[in-house]
Image 1 (cartoon, rainbow, N blue to C red):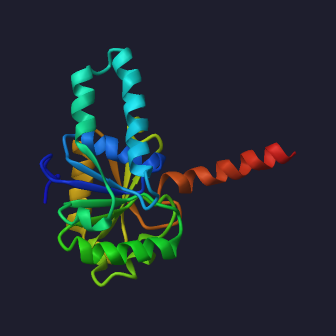
Image 2: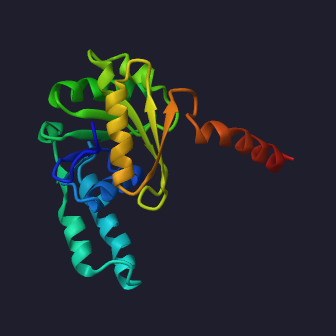
Length: 209
């Protein structure tokens, strides 16, 4: 498989900083994007934040007002998960809670039978999340770094059951989105956080001293 085409819909679940950033990245690549959050009005507020961020780029001459309008027009807030059934890729960007993620992906498995399912988790096991699914091979980790529109690196994480072909599709898609994609194993912290955490711990120790 190759990268998803710009005509294919991307759904993003979770309209916080990460979800909004991922939605902006996908829309910037030309995809129609559906943005969902269970909190009423959260998706609309996320789009307002995206607009404000793009306003600054327009002011600096980085993008045109027409490019801004076209990007924003591709992001559609939706009120229910049932509205994302046509998505080719669903990217979850919700709270880092294993049971909540498992519950969400069980819903998505039925609502989006043909979609690739991706989690933006920064630390939870893709294998563990996928263990709740009837078809865990559909689940891949797609870990963006904050702020997603600026940070280049994206980790593509395979769980034990993940389909390698789907992982390669997400790798190619991330590259097509202008990102630096790397394959990672489903180990604690994946690549970057696993390397960085000892430095975080040392910084905290020095602060305490």
